[in-house]
Image (cartoon, rainbow over all chains, first blue to last red; front, side):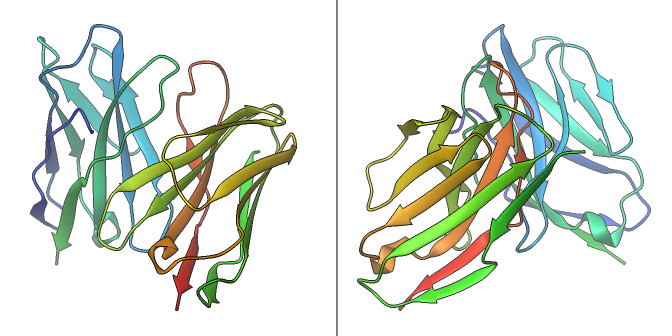
Length: 109
Length: 113
């Protein structure tokens, strides 16, 4: 079973920030948080990952709470092309990914 | 740069027929390779993974098998397809013992009728 809990769906207005939450209250100290997204009928795309510190790349920012029990993926300026299912995955070193149902993000014009 | 190829993109097969899906990776050596299946409206389920030639680990009991005849080639097979084998099949690769950051192919949509 997936170690994360995400809302099944969210809406976001185009141009606004999309904040996608993820709960991982049972995360272990050596487990990472990964985010992927899957645009309809395509393979999942890696977005970002982190352990303790907040991370930022050209796609998104990842904010991990100090107790590491939850995190938020931030898409700073959502576009229509960001409409997808977003998966939050907790995984330890050498372990395989377990995908949950994710959050279906709809970016609205 | 690394690329991953999966084919075919779509496939319609009758129940009881054999299956062979192929995945190849370019631009990297000794990748970890994965086969996932995604049923309609569901998340991804890991079927098989391989850390080297001839080394296959199965995550779930099923009607499918996998083989890795070459370093960068991963094949998913079945001798007789079932209706329940329908789905979206995805191949992925990663490098290193950490298995971090998997990169996915475009997938094969299989319909068993």
